[in-house]
Length: 393
Ligand code: NAD
Ligand code: MG
Image 1 (cartoon, helix red, strand yellow):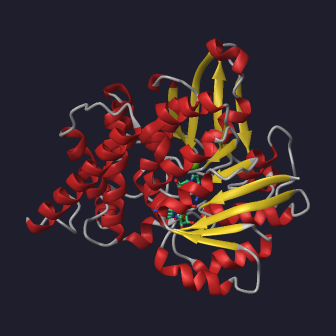
Image 2 (cartoon, helix red, strand yellow; image 1 turned 90 degrees about the vertical axis):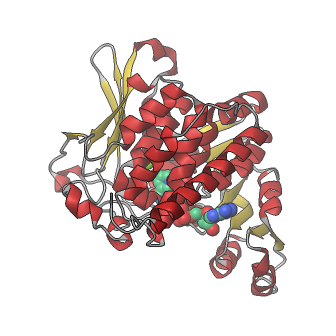
């Protein structure tokens, strides 16, 4: 029986992973489940999956979680350090589904044990990709991409034919504002931005999909995961989200992975790997779907992907700025402090100020990431005090 842990089990990807494990109860033993704040759901999941241990990030919720699990022998711990420690507790397969840069140290702890690490949590790959890849090489850990595009590429990437790969094509739904004008986007509300047409996801990634920042982060993620230069990674808008990505080879062949827009497919692929196991998710019916559409990305309306390519060329510090400024700007938008269009403007303003400090070690990465967050908050406060808050530009 394989043992599995889920970091961020109460989130969108975490819940899909729990659903899948309930479908395969006989084959997996659940070791650790972690979450930031939803003690009720965490306790429910741990009970249902008979987990060995739960860890809650918010220490003030320790007592609530303990009393919810008092009738079980499930171990309870709390705090950020406990989450990082729990990621290092032996498991055959660990799902990294925390949101944001907060997942970096847990991912490194999981990788340190040289096991299979399924990575949904893209921000640490964007901000610290070279370090994460090197850590996996050193420990012998296998990184299994869970982001649907990267999982698709992983499935059709011929390792023995890398020199014949012309390009990776990441597909993008285009998000909820694909057909909106710039003026409509300027006035977009958080509710409109999180209403994704195809995927049901956490708030942060939903806003990222609306700005196309999600695709931009994915270009950087793909570059590190598949060791490809930015000019070999293209983005193609495909509103139905059925082709999850493709690899084009020199012989003219495109290899693609198709599936319903349901995260349980890439999660199942990663859980079963290298075997193929049954999903608990939706199946694709192409006859009902009838057609697949494609269009070029409007880079004027959605400049984020070009910004990501520039960051990859500029160096790893720019990728840290790109991610950290975005995390702060997205939260400010969700808190109604800035308008939707201001998200990209804030990120660009912070990129414009970037030097390229040394970010080769973990301490340097964490310190620089924090300094960018502080600068972004100052920049947004300055914007607000000059009266440019809610308005897009
Ligand atoms: P979410 O917000 O729904 O869930 C995040 C999880 O992380 C929750 O369990 C939360 O309690 C926990 N968490 C939040 N902040 C934390 C912190 N500071 N420390 C420890 N734990 C913390 O997010 P999600 O939509 O499930 O996305 C998770 C990650 O997967 C993100 O990086 C996202 O970009 C990526 N991803 C998500 C999807 C999707 O369909 N949702 C698809 C592809 C990739
Ligand atoms: Mg994706």
